[in-house]
Image 1 (tube, rainbow, N blue to C red):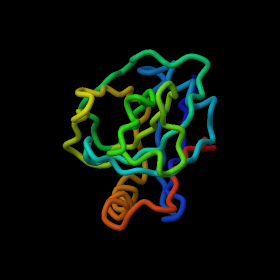
Image 2: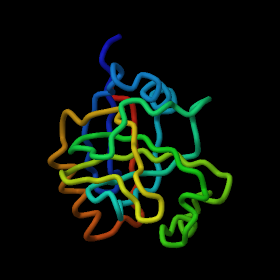
Image 3: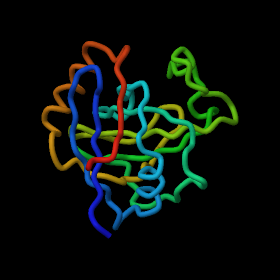
Length: 168
C-alpha cells in the first residue's frame, strides 16, 4: 500500500501540518479515519494530557477499532484516536454540553487528537489511565502548528475549528 497523508488545520488561524498515516501499526484505525475524511469540528485544548488539541465527532466507523498501537505517553506529532461514552465525558467540568456536542449517557464520541509538544501523560483525574491509539505522525509543519496550539491555549479556542483532510 502506498503511504497516505492528511492535512490537519486550525482553520481560523490559517495554520496546517501534514501527517503520515501509520497503516503498518494501526491499520484498522487508519482505515476508519481515512474513510470518514474530511472531518472538522470545534477544537479543544487538553486540560489533563497537557500539550494536546483535539476535536470530538460522532462515531464514524462501522465498528470501533481495537486498541492497536496504544500509548499513554504520546510524543510530539502523534495523532491519537480515543472513543468515549457520554458517561465518561458528561461531567460539567469538561464543558462539552455548552458547545452543543451530544455528550450524554449512552452517546459515543470519537476524539481525534494532535500532540504538539513533549511531556504528555494520558491520565485523567476522573477516569484514570486513558490509552490512545497512535494512528498518524506529523511529518511536516509541526513547529508552526505548535506555535498556533500555544496561542490557542493562551488566547482561547472559541470559533476555532480543527480539520482533517486527505492530502493529495
